[in-house]
Image (tube, rainbow, N blue to C red; front, side, top):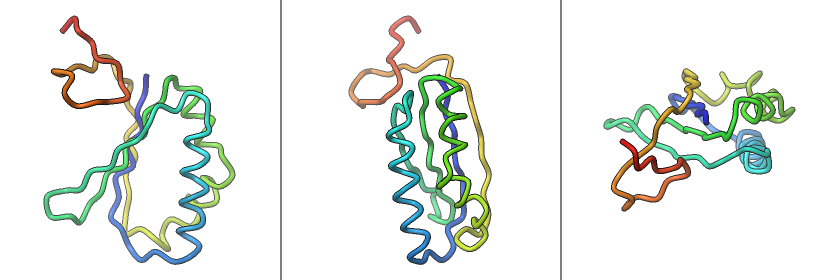
Length: 109
């Protein structure tokens, strides 16, 4: 299982941003192997983190080649004041099962 964290400083969004963002979200959700996503804000609210979870690396690569995603990447500087991507392999996920999550809950901690 893999995650791709899109860490960014929001800028000014326009109609084109919202159009592409909707298409990208739809593309992610329809990619076989997509598990889910979650978004977090820094304490001061100036930096956001949208983390997407994928069943396998091929699924993540498939999404990364989506034409809408590629189009948005070319124009990122119109909408963001900066970004950073972290792709990670998830080797374990666990908790007390009171918070639902798309990653499997490993009972063998």
